[in-house]
Image: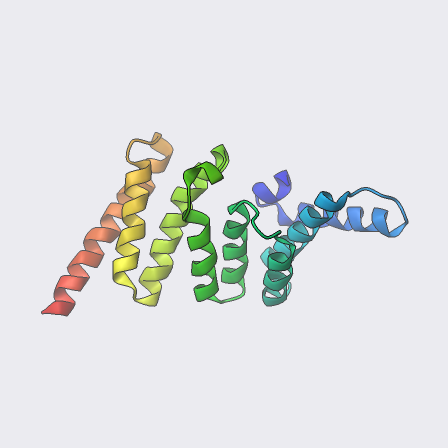
Length: 173
């Protein structure tokens, strides 16, 4: 999982192949929860390496247990983006950022700001300017008092909101 978290998909692929080979030899490495995690990881790595991302999205979605933490929706959104389906990516990312905050662990709190920014970009690309403004605004709200490392994204979100408001004003004239 650390290999995936740090975006080292090639090494994650090697590790997943070793796990599969170990299991194919009749050894038991994974319990039922581990098998679900393996299937999600396999689908995610396949998608990030460009191996049929549409099929990988279906495999990933199937491996996410019903009622599971919404964390998995962020990765599904990334897979749908790799598959060239921004509408499904937006739907998955929206599921990630909606709902009670207690569903998000500590590391997911940082991801929420990143996902709101990505939702802003996707909505902007799709021409949904009001939705883009909302998501960029959520980045600013969430991270305005954050560490210095996130302040460039806050400033970029503010710049994009200003540009979108200008664009909307020009389009209404």
